Length: 70
Image (cartoon, rainbow, N blue to C red; front, side, top):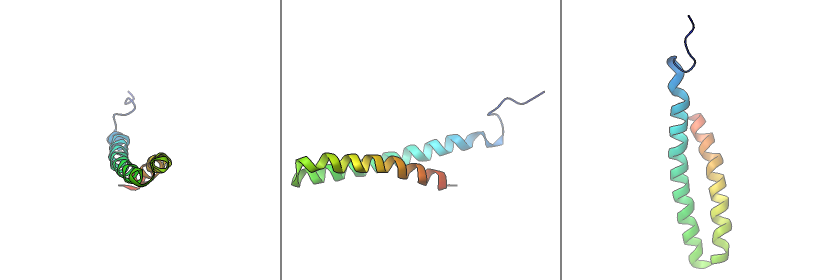
């Protein structure tokens, strides 16, 4: 009889990866939001590009960090 997929010892690894990713994204997006609001005080037109660049950088960097966490 075969074991069903996902029931083995390493089944929690993908879940840990997703949890770390979500935590890193939440932290990064909070930083991106704060940076966008800070830039908005000086230049409202510049705040959107700053926020969006940090937003997409956070998605990439959070994945890279989550994969490296044991």
